[in-house]
Image (tube, rainbow, N blue to C red):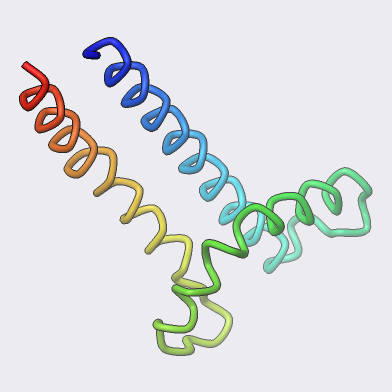
Amino acid sequence: MDTFLDITFSIAQILLTVLWWIVVVQAILSTLIAFNVINTYNDFVSSLWRGLNTLTEPIYRPIRRILPDTGPMDFAPFVVLIIIWILQDAVLPNVARALIGSSV
């Protein structure tokens, strides 16, 4: 049972880390596009931009409904990064510790 919980905890940590990097790359790409450092006329940039938006938009949408409109500055990625950080450093370790402790 402990092995199953360890594997599940590790998979959750890996998925949250991957999500962290997806959000970071999307935020950087968004900033670069906003300041015309790169443009979406490039096929690779356009494909990457559409793919990242497809992955992140369902996560950002509920957060954007709660946050006030700040014009061109989007704070949803920062909120998502904070939530991921809380999940990785506070929630998951405590849940794993509680589950492993209760299975002994």
